[in-house]
Length: 209
Picture (cartoon, rainbow, N blue to C red):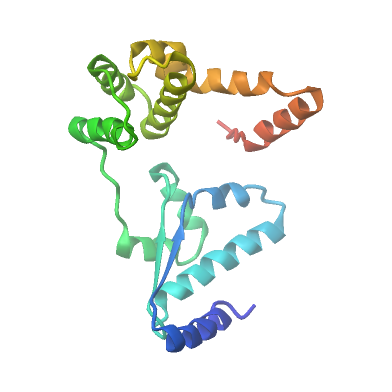
């Protein structure tokens, strides 16, 4: 392939017309490792290598101002050695997002609800702050739990306050995700249930250990 050169040529022309900088955000970069997990699929591996090489070329070239940011779970960082040149590029610009402290976590809980006029019971906030540290994927679980609490309050409870009754009804942080999944699956007919089962199986990654 011609690598990033054709794209850079296009961006140079665009820069001359509109005088803009360029920014590429690659979110959840770790999904690329899942994409290339099947070692026998050479086409997939080649596509992944081409993508990483082009991304690196864009970040290194100096013809146009082009910035690349990729987000990735820290437990996948070792897998970056799969791609030539990627560890070196990461070493030059690595930023580890620090864990939120209790004050910041409180802001993350209360801020979105207040933005939309929601009222949070103080006992619920304390319970969430105490529970969230018990889970490895705390922020995604917290986000999902808050969404479920909001939906229960708005659609069912309607007490005017996000409170412990809403929290208990959705199963708490421990059961909120599985209970939501059960509710979604219960609405499917038999053919759709079969498709959903195959999708979940495809999304599940089981390592050799």
